[in-house]
Amino acid sequence: MHRTMTNPKNKFLNFHSSTFYSLVAAVVLNVALGLFTPKVLAESFRGSFEASAQEKSKHVSEMWQFSRTMQECLNADYQHHLNFYRRYGISPFYGSNSSFKRLGYNGRRNFLRSIGKDPNLVDVMKPTSCVGLATKCFERAFNQTGQGAVWARIKRYVAANSYDGSALIDGFRRLGWYVMYWNPDPSQNNAWDSDEKRRNPSNNGTWGYHAYRYSTATKNKKYYMNSIDDAETLVGFGTRPPRVLDDASVFVGVAHAGYHVFPGYKGKVIEAHSTRDIRDANSVESSDFNPIESGGAPRGNYRSGIVAVPPGEGPRASFWPWN
Image (cartoon, rainbow, N blue to C red):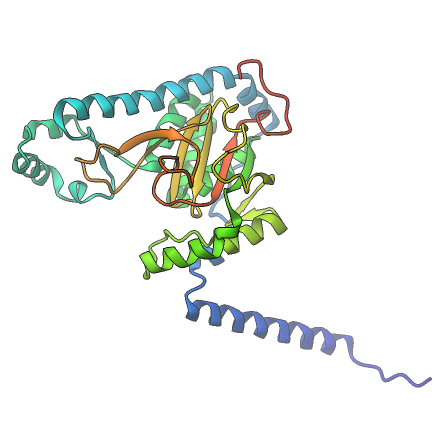
């Protein structure tokens, strides 16, 4: 039989050229349609963080005190907010991206005076944000358990990625934490995507890309730039979350590719917000993890994301004695 021979090199080039141009055309079309943004197409985090076997072992051995310190820190800020608000009608925390923050020191004093508050209160008020609260309390927990050097490297890694909460979770996974994708009702993905585009047509990083993220999480164990361990446990639970976070001594989650960060423990989220008005009673707030239940956390129309729990506290792990 006569067989026409082709140059393998030409075959390789023709295949990859056609594939390349198809991919380019797809990306151009999707960008034109507003389906993808640079954040969606991002490939990897900037910089790196790795933990040694000794550091991972130390982290596990210190988890009892680590989680206690984390819980105390979160509760302290939350209780301070509640007490201050009851006394003065404003929060002691102002969002790091809020209009109040942008006023500057004298402007903040003038604003307090204009709403009938003592302008000297500005001296005891501090900025906060979702990632700011989380990193503040994690820093305290790492430092008080003799793991300050590990935290310093994680913090540099997070800073190199513009304090994206997804980088924080990636760092923790490299320290041995278990990362789960969460989505209470995948059947609503397309409706959620449409709703977010309608509410915020210009998009400022707040879109969740729920249908796309669900596909990559369930098919490839990838969420945004994060590798994940579990795309089943916290998927499709509606308003009845599994107990995995109730059993966690501490956890940290993100929504919408790291746009929002929410730390917590034993199923309870304590979260701060970077844009809230100081007169908002919920500048720092707490509620049970239950994203689509009225009053549930995370608060603010966040419908899917990822969450990390410490080593040994995942759904298929043996739980530590202190749980």
